[in-house]
Each structure stands twice: as C-alpha cells, then as structure tokens.
Length: 184
Length: 184
Length: 184
Image 1 (tube, rainbow over the protein chains, first blue to last red):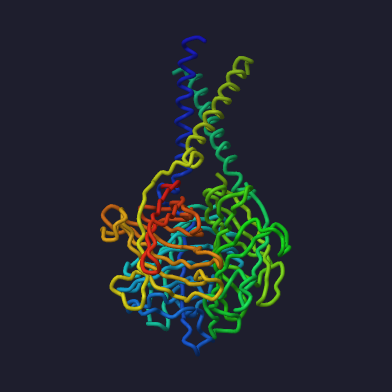
Image 2: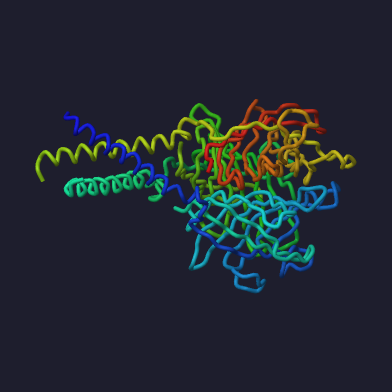
C-alpha cells in the first residue's frame, strides 16, 4: 500500500469510530440527559371504605394497624382508585390505579406502594407498573416504573408522587407525575 | 483540500452515519418488532387451603375479604404453587410460582399479582420476577416481567395470563405465556 | 464509477460495519460479562415487634401465620429496618430498608420480599427497588433490582441475600450484596 493510502485509511477509520460513538451517544442521550420519551400527570383519588360507604369507596383496609407507634404501622390497604387528568374528583377517570400500600414507620407517616395504572380508553390501552417507598415526609417522592404492557410495552421510568390534598382517613388525593425514559 | 476530496469525504461520512444507524436499528429490532428472545408457556395450579387439606393445598388466605362489594375485595392469598408444562395437575412440576395476589374490585372479580417463577432443575436454574394487574374480566391479560436471575439474568418481558379452568374456591388453573424480550 | 473506486467503497463499507459492531459489542460488554457498574454490600437488621418492645422494634406482623404447615405460611411482616455497612447492629445506618415479606412454604421456611433501600445521606440520595423469592434453604439467593431513583436513577441488577445470623423470632440479620449492571 502506498503511504498516502495508509494515511487516508487511518483517517477514515478515525472518523468511523468517532461517528459510531456519537450516534451511540445520541441514542442514549435520552437516558443520560434524563429527558422522558413520554411524560404526563394524573391525579389519584382515594376514598377509603369506612364499613358503610360502599357506593363511594374504592379502597379498603386488608389488615389493621399494629400497636407499633401511632402512625398506622402495618395497616395494608388494597385499592382500585380512579385516576383523572385534573384534580376534580368528579372528572371522568382516564385510568384506574390498582394495587396496595401499607404504612411502615413507627414515628411518622410513611408508606410503601406497588400499583398498576390500567388504561382502557380509545386514547390508551395498556398498563404501567410501579413500586417503591412513598416517603410521605418529603414534598415529592420518586417511585420506579418497572414495566408496562400494551401502549406502554416494556416501558421504564420514574413516577413522582405529591400529596395534593389530605382530608383525614376519608379522602386523599395524590398528583402522580409519570416520566417514561424507555419507550418502544 | 481539493474539491474532489471534499465531495468524497462527505459521501463517506453520509454512508458512515447511515450504516451506524442501520446497525443500531437491527440491534433494537427485537424490541421494536416485539419478537421474544425466549418464549414458553406454563400452567399454574392453585389449591387454596380450606383449613383441613394441608396435604394438597399450596396457597392460603393471609387476610379475609372485606365487606366492600361481593367479590372478595381485600382478600390476600400467599402461594407456593406448582407450574407444569401441560395442563395436567399431576404432571411433574418444572417450576414453582411463589408470590401473592389480592382481589381488588368491588363490582367484579379482579386481582393484582406479584410472583417469582423459581426454576431449579437440570434444564433451568434461576428465577423470573413479574407483577401487575390481573384483569380477570378480560380473556387474556398482560403483566410485566421486571427481572430475572440465574439462567434468566436481568431479563424483562411480558407474562400473559389466561384462566384455563376455575373450579370455585377449591382449584383454579392459569395458562401463563412468558415472552422475554431482553435476554443476556 | 471506476472499478478501482467500487472496490475501495466496498472495503470502506466493510470496515464501517465491523467497526460499528465492535463499538456496540464493547458497549454491551458490561452486561454480557456480568461485571457490575456499581457493587456494594450492606447489612439488614430486623427486630420484630413482640408487642412491648416498640423502642427497639423496626418491623411488625401485619398478618398472623395460617395453619398450613408449621413454617409460618401466610405471615406477612412490614418493616422499616436499618441498613449498616458492617454487621454491627449499633453501627450508624447508611440506609433504611422499607418493604415487606411473607412466609410461603408449608414444609420449610421460605419467604418472598419486596423492598426499597432508601438512601438519604451526604454520600447518597435516592432509592433502589428490589423484589423476588428468598429461598431460605439456599445459602445465598438472588433477587431482582428492578429500578432506582436519584443517585440510582433507572438502575437494574441483582441483590444477593445471605442470612448472617438468626436469633429466633427476636432478631435476624441479612447480608445483602447489591450488584448493579445498568447505571445512568
């Protein structure tokens, strides 16, 4: 090979490697820059069953609180709660939140959640699965979106919970901000 | 640089970028085309403990149903059920399904599951972890495979549940179709 | 095109494809070689509430064991346990383990866990979510790390549990080895 050609080839190779790496970097920039490929906000409404309001209630205690502390430690709640696009309890639900949580701190309120957002409308069909600690002392707390099905096939991301209103044991509302970083 | 060389270089760069992208596209086609890298079907057999059949039972109620509706809302069941390759209850189990579910709808049967498929044979060693809503009103419903260990190291995918037979509270059988889209 | 140029172009293309593939292969070698991008070991300390030791206890039974077998089948425990860097119960906790487990085998001890490691120190802020079967008969057993937030944004991996000490119902300690294979 002529020296001139060798130089050219090396140059081409260098460009090749740099280009490949930048294409890869670009592809992964979603995750690295933490820009979601899908992003939306929904409101979670919970009316806890008090034994007589079966018409309104959408959640119920499966276990009673223990006597470890005064913050309902060990109380496990099962739910099928409506999710709406705004914070109005009477808005048409766009999804259901199905899952459970329990309180688990002896010196403050603190919970742990696992739930599925179930979408079944003309707009969206599919589910989003999430789990994690709900550190109620923090204003906003992040849980993991660990999977999805249908329109949300194999998704992953972060779900940020914020307490929007809390009316004692009767009713509370969370704002759930869903940021998906893997969309297929 | 001679104009001729500039033109050539641009052409080479263009080809470079196109090639890199097509290689990347090919690599991700698994997920985009939704072709599983592993795919199998197993049957889940559940005999719920009635208080006296400890020899046969492989699951038991950890909590009683609440009075919210008539569909066992809040009843939580813990299980260590056999998984077989065909729908015969007496076939040799190829895995165990360890986990729990609870009923969570007040106007129909509906459940939420989290479970681990535990493989411990000469063929397969390892676990597959899944969770999600079991929308029992649908003929087939998708849950998320969120992780795996051993032979199923770091896997992800979809598990499709179908009720194969339902003999009241005593015995039911699910067909679980496992489609893995990430295999390492 | 001159034959000489055609030959050159093909050669360049070949190099291109090979280079792209090797760059991709390198990128995925983490997972393929199963070398963690983060790796650490923590100790999990559990003092189960006995009804009177609220000052020390960090976990409590939410349900009682059933009568299916003699290994606490169906007993569900909720916890907010300290995690330390060494096996000394009195060491300063570097994280909390928040979650639950239940026993689920009728002929031996066996459990199923889902939990969040909550880090909130100057060193680490964020959470790691994991779940899976805790096959207590095995000396070491692998669970799935299915997600993370904050410093552990979108992580995945394997958590290996080993029983470090077991002092009856009162106190037990696990060594949890966390290997993360996806770090962003």
